[in-house]
Image (cartoon, rainbow, N blue to C red; front, side, top):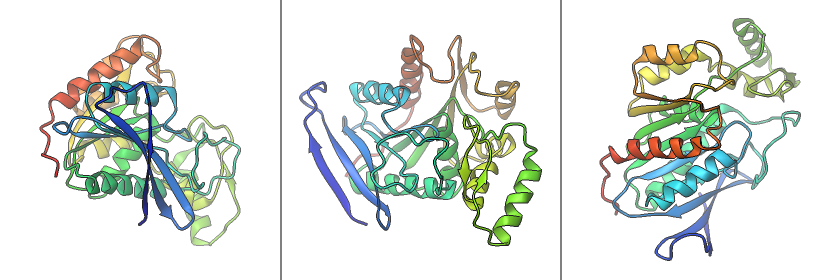
Length: 284
């Protein structure tokens, strides 16, 4: 896999630190990019993933990236390609979606490998919203041994509106088995209309609350959740369900799904506290 690095001069960072843009070809003709902010060698590297259809420039992620780097952590913040070459903008709900969760998970794996190839042997996965789900999906498939911990913020399942999930899954499975290629238009996450291939939609729809809870219980690495008690995106009872899994969780009072405003500082503080407990492996 070809890897390109383009050095950038960013004046807002300390002189001792610097940033680059990393690029990898995820699939033939589909390059994807990530911000690589280099921190102190004695700390674990953070792979920070954005939410559904967004980019690494989404405010919650961009603010957390800067805060982590200022605290001395190396941060790799990719933008998932969603099968669009060099994607740099959020993807509209109404666009034709030819990506899948399998593609997303594969790209996470590529970026973990990229960090390892650059000497990082202790990696922490940090996600926001749907990015937290995608990272859990990666962890459920024999993650690289360099991954030491997971921090999920505003973790949420693949929401599908009022549709009965079991019936939708059965319908999509029939389409896949019948090799039907016609697009399916179905609510997904915050999208009221989400036209997608049957295979792609099915890969997301299967990740309901039960599957998320199981992935948390079975995580091969340490888990920490950071949630807001004023998050009106999650369904009623979700915080109680998460509490029953008995994984470490911080509930930020007054914080919404995006942890914006004054709660940006709470998100950064709790993330840093979690990172401080992780013993790094010396970089090569």
